[in-house]
Image 1 (cartoon, rainbow, N blue to C red):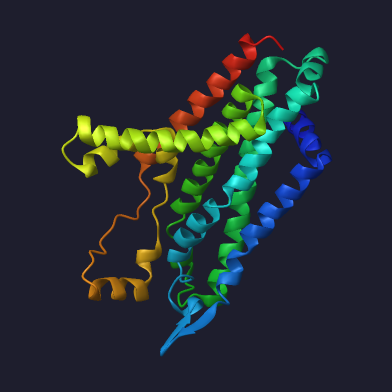
Image 2 (cartoon, rainbow, N blue to C red):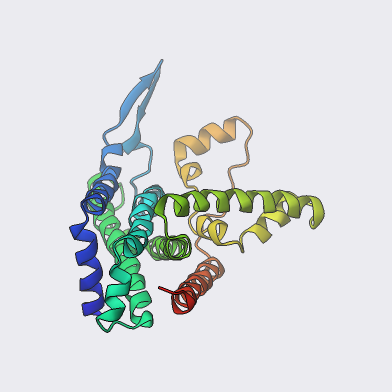
Length: 278
């Protein structure tokens, strides 16, 4: 495992674009800390983000993991480029000539995306602890380390998404086309949502539940949008007559669906490499 990871990380670090994107990604993750300093006035209303409850334990685990998940597209570019470069520079064929099996090749890629997901999760863990202890009104140990399931869901979300990107990079070979296909895939799932409502189900809720079994939507469903948990937003919504009740919990079934898709895409990636004339 260490040998396979070392080979892949060396390839990424020697590529200037990949190096810049990787550094930029972790810098952007650090930008979560900047949100705490946001203060602005709208007429007589004073907004201080840090005092809205966002950084209170244990809710900060939810907010930070959801916010950080938006930056995963930066690493998606690295992953599809990593595969495109294998074909462009002939390193895939050279690795196989040097004695690496096709199974080891796929494992090296999977270990790399898993490492990216783990490093991102560890980074968010550290940032969340720093921000939480700085701004949270509750710092008791049992409160601080409750709701840690959001970190597990964040890791699974990144792992699943990166695995899809890896599969597309292997399937399409060109990074730009692979990323474009990712967008088309998302649109396809949206169209399926509409078709399921019109043809199969009598309510939008049932169609949305069925959509949760699709790859990209299942990933999106892992961590719910957290803004309604903020007390100020909840109060404003209640006064406006909106229903603010929502299920924010992490469901094991949602994690299982993503892990199944992760397994499927790794297997499909291996089968493509196994059968393709390289």
